[in-house]
Image 1 (cartoon, helix red, strand yellow):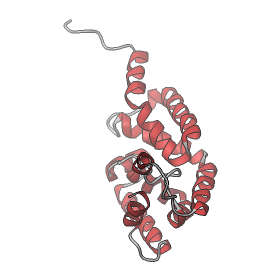
Image 2: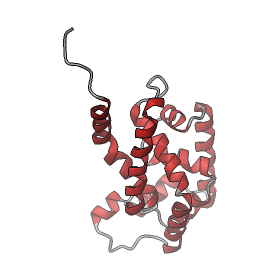
Image 3: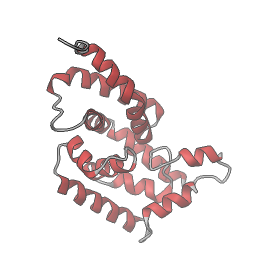
Image 4: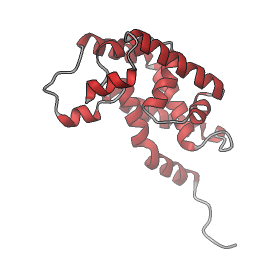
Length: 185
């Protein structure tokens, strides 16, 4: 037999944790804030470890699988996310005195959304919000979102389209992405 023996399952999981924990944390923190983000990331990896025997690499890559678990965990924290988005909506536009680095880091998130767009995101049905935020925050492709959420590619497209249409209407016909750029410019 040539080469090294296959890694012990715990070593493999350690590598997965090291490779993806920070990314999953950032996604969760953007949706729920840093404190809840830590909880969600930890819970995601606990559930991933418990479900490791059911992971099917033919269905999705590890990263996509983890985002699917994280999105389900976030869903359990949905009330907190909705409250955070509505609170941002009440705050209105960001203050001009924000540090430049804060403006750069502020993306489509519960921490960075302001005004009407935060309220509109909070009002989206959960399925549309999950698709929109996996695309916007995690930069997942339609295929990856479909695999992460266990839905069809077409469902991803229709939910994303409906979410964008709803946001555009809520913003009086304004392109949500241009509004975000203005807020964080």
